Length: 405
Image 1 (cartoon, rainbow, N blue to C red):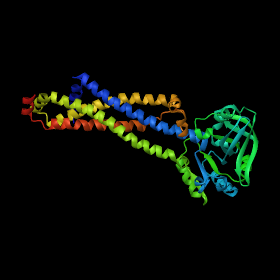
Image 2: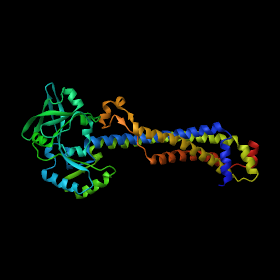
Image 3: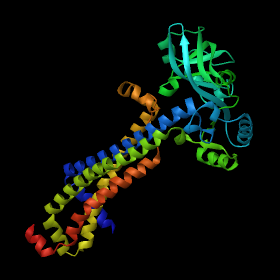
Image 4: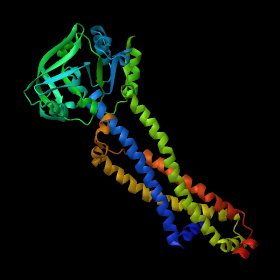
């Protein structure tokens, strides 16, 4: 390949600007769609996991082995296990750890009764693990015993106001237990399971459940820390009978959704690739047919067929590069915008979003790897599409080409 080939390829492109612009638009469209699609898809799962991690579950949790199969307080962690686990976590690179005791119960107000999940937490440490306190719409966070935190949805359904008394009923070891609480704050969350949860002091929860331990220890990690690395070190040090549950263990449905989404994305990527390939191949092949006589004359004056084939390939490379830069730039700017403003799916998905643990607003993900992925798919497809026209040029006989042209 020489500079002559480069000049010829570039000149040939702009001899027919409309045709060249058409190919550039096709490549740019493919690059744009693939880039946006991957960014929004990753952003969807990223937004979903961040909402669960930051507001609800923490980065990971420690649980008694088998608790997930029968989640009752008696199958939770014992006080000695809690002490051992907290000591191990204090030696590792974690931000905070907070024991929890969760059980099911009934919440009764002066105007109705509803089933809820009861979560007993340490009022101080829990605020270091999750950011639920940042979603308060009224009142304050828990400060001690005898207080309860409700979601706005639950408070509205049972017509509970700040400062009013409500009663929690739960199944303890010796039968049904109950205790009165004062509503000190309301929070608002897009997570459906969190909206059905009430928060009380872990000491009150232990009295209600008749269990002195905890059902889990929620752990948060500093920003930028690899959860997989810390989880691996915890698993090496933790004693028998305790399991470390990561995000996918706590949300098994999400793993299936991600796997299904990747499979469903492949046909879409293939379709876009075929669209780009067909547009480039069709236009390039027509251009080659149109210039058959010209190629024959160039071969007759001494230009090798291999050089002619390179000219055709270079034309496709130029078109793909220009199209990718244009489409990729627009697509990446769009992703940056969506990563800051977000897409509001609240009205579109309604309560279904909360069932998935998905926040109402989805923020796109921005990564340089999307450029690499889009470049690989689009440019590779365009070059493959240009292979047949280049092969045809490579087989031209000068005399026959001049006569056919």
